[in-house]
Amino acid sequence: MSDLTYKAEGLNPLVLFADNHLLAVNKPAGLLSQDSGTGLRNLEDWAREWVRVDKGKPGAVFLNAVHRIDRGVSGVVLFARTSKALTRLNEDVRNRNCRKIYHALVEQSPERSAGKLIHWLSHEHHRANLCREGDKGAQRAVLSYRVIKPVGPLSLMEVDLETGRYHQIRAQLSAIGCPIAGDEKYGASQNVQTGEIALHHRRLEIVHPTLKKPFVIEAPYSDDSLWWGGI
Image (tube, rainbow, N blue to C red; front, side, top):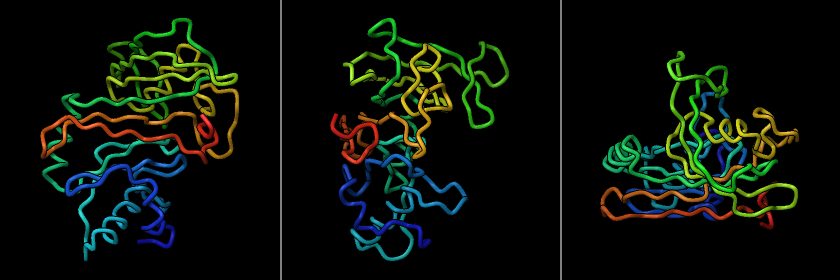
């Protein structure tokens, strides 16, 4: 563990759920989900150290992220604590036997208060680009949304993510003229030096890999957030 790793006890307020097979954490914006090879602190290493200390696990700790969220995004990140759980959850993700709900604060309210967005996206140079079906690297991207309420000059939207493409929500909301606040890469007007964008993985609905029952994990907004504090 590097000296950049957070102390294990610091993760306690962010732990949403833990049992012998799963660990769910409310990731702060600005923190990498996994090791990027840069040596920067990341949630997975921090969570692994938390398991080692909290559960009294000597030696290597098995812990793998089931999914990732972007560095500037906050909210639910789910880890598997056993290989059995990882295999079953990965299969459920591939078969879309899970549901990911995000909340976003956007700079412009969409023309329709609810709807479904279908685009084709390609991924290059750390960016998702709109393209056409059949173009090289084109992937179908689908999400549903609804406007919840205005929040000052912004609008709070709920997004039900049906596919999991690179930067999908950011690119698709920008494509309809509703860039996420703080997301300058996709057209937001504000340049936020912290890198935090107003996108939060609010709720994850899965089937528990061993109990075989529907299971919901929800992440509250952080009061310390640039965007979400006080909402």
